[in-house]
Image (cartoon, rainbow, N blue to C red):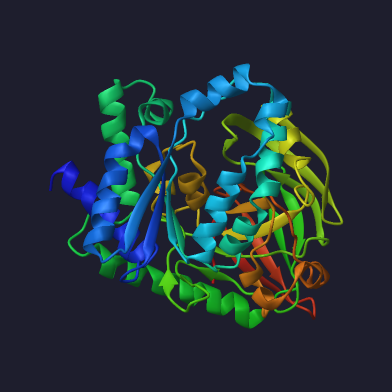
Length: 410
């Protein structure tokens, strides 16, 4: 099968499985300018699927870099009213949203971290209603990725531009399960494995998980009462099932924001607002980050931890076997969508209200009282290693191995 055929299949999967577009529904596509050709393939698939309309919002990371270099902080922190109106309209109209994530990991190297932080905080606050709609599944959304030259060259620095892009396409096609005759059936079968793991974790209602690894990770993560682990597909507020991430290998929930203690060491680099952070670790006490370090990008890490209320606490706990299909490619993608699905991970910032019984009916105060973090930030980072052990601790103190040597033991 030709590359263009695989690209079209990926576009069709994003529409049919990712957001599960319904007849007459509108679709919004967020895409980097370099991904224009693929955005058109998604639009074509959407119209063939019965979309009422399709609109595309393009971004240009080269121009974004110019703005950080030349525009004032005052300018960068002023979010236009039309932008907020656009997000509100998308939610009010029940649009589906497909976002193509293909960031050059080095695009913001050398940019003033305080400028980046200020702009990110301003945007997060202004877009909070849209953020709430996403984390509560009030609209259906999906994140996918396709190669750009900058990203591909970061992943495959020794290849030519064209060969690097081709190699990254090969990896994305395999990870996204479109390299077979019936990818839709493949995704449904994959979803069954998430359900089995989630059912086990939810039935046991562990009080805490203890993480240990030879790299220095030694962390106890308390869990809220009535937590819900989920993975793969989710049900939106309208009852329609969708896949928020393609690809995905994770089973995830929300930890208790105030019951995290110990040391947590990263296993993969993180690209945050275009800035690379690597070799980093956190110390937690009673849920808050009390100390942190990064070999590369410590200023960017500092801006993340201090970016918004709740950005110094955990909002997501995600379990991914070390020997997952993406991990076994032995590729460092420098892209959270892929790297988080090659490794157990956490997220600083907001918890998904869907991760606790009745959470979508709770207001902000009720969520906090139940132990869930509420924040305008949500940033995943990877901690999985080949020797990682995770022990589930029951209310009576009984310990059950959940992960041993980096993989599921249940």
